[in-house]
Length: 335
Image (cartoon, rainbow, N blue to C red; front, side, top):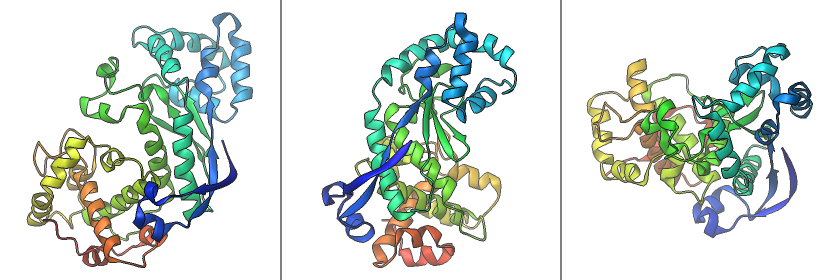
């Protein structure tokens, strides 16, 4: 849930000189974000009072409870009888560690004011840029290792059990090793805002070549970094510090290889997936190159473009539809 409570003072030491001077005034209205605790309410369900407890969940969370039943539990929202049998089993399951996981989730997420504060600051900046956007109501829930984020209409639910820490032992059973890097509590704010950006910022280009996709996703990453100026860029990208440094060290080689292979203007799914999708590495470059390097290069091009365009606004940048012109005016020349 959210409400407007006053003025957020945006200091240059927080945003950095360029974003403050170019994109935001000294003061912007604050969006106060608070997260609804479906997870806490769910943990209060008892087998001996299951029907009453289920009725209470429906009353307290009328929008999210049907989504939880159908998308997470795989139960028809009308099948209350089966729900009353399946829900206690879901909470007590030991085969996949749900019981232990739910207990750990309650401890780790006992205090979430840091997440709410980070989201409040980010959504305040977005509200200044896009006052017509809907600021989503947010829920915290446990998903049985099925969903990090789940849309509830225009609102968003956060699967807390997918953010228990990269070394959480049960993750070895359900995800690939490379996916665990971003399965940390501190990754939630950027994941939430990233989901909102991709949902609300339309793809502006007429074509879907690699160049167009790189610059679209690169723009979203640039805006995401503006929303979280205190966050290291490698965290915004979902990289480790070492992965980011590898890309910086080999930036010219990566760019030259994309150009030499004439991949920039390809639009086949295999090429796009290789450069843009998550995975253990980017096969088109090397097994040492982090995945999604096309997004990373797109971000570097956008960063260069902003530096060379003194009057561009963030909203105009997001709406730019001519990828070729954007590339040319970026004067991007990695060294």
